[in-house]
Amino acid sequence: MAEILLMGLVVVVIYVGSDWILRTIERTRGRSFEGYRTIVFFMIFLPLALIAFEVAQRMTG
Image (cartoon, rainbow, N blue to C red):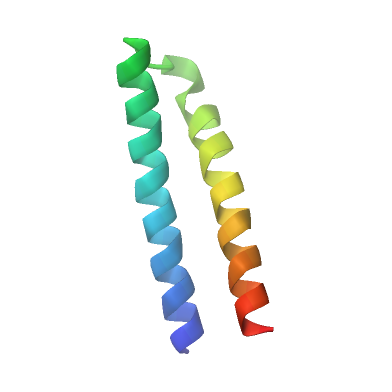
């Protein structure tokens, strides 16, 4: 049960971090991605999630 809660917390942190990265990129760029915002968010979120789950899997064996 604790693992499920921990992974849920990790997903929330990755989501918030991905949103922050996306907003930072948009701010630096000077405009939003408009119609492609969801795709860009997914391109940031997915690698972070895969890395986090791989790290968690290696830590738990």
